[in-house]
Amino acid sequence: MNGDVVLDFSHNTNFTTLDWQQALTVRFTGMTPHVGEMLGVRLIDKKTRHEISRETLRAIESADFDITLPGIQKGDEYRIDFFC
Image 1 (cartoon, rainbow, N blue to C red):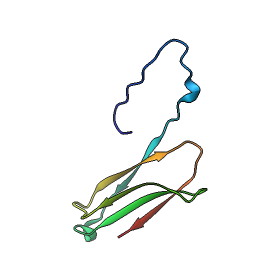
Image 2 (cartoon, one colour; image 1 turned 120 degrees about the vertical axis):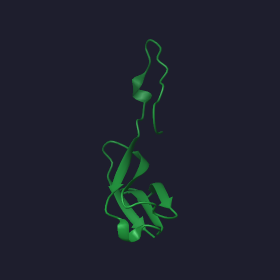
Image 3 (cartoon, one colour; image 1 turned 90 degrees about the horizontal axis):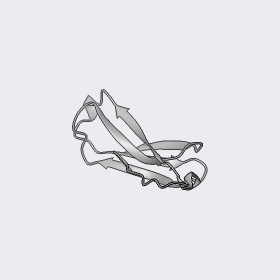
Image 4 (cartoon, one colour; image 1 turned 30 degrees about the vertical axis):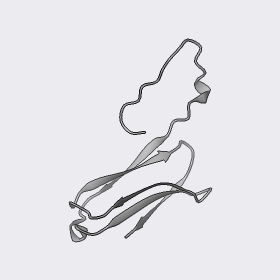
């Protein structure tokens, strides 16, 4: 989930059912030599080795940009893979 989120609240809501997921943002800078090239980034859960999320740019548009990978959870460990 990205952006604003609206949660419905009623008295005696059971908050133990909430399972917040966060997003990891990777800030790329100085990528001038790679403008126009493809870039893939994926987020892997280190324990399960499952892919959590993936973002692929067909062509890098500028030297500085961000890629956001949703799905991280507090307490888990992750690995980031880059591919082209």
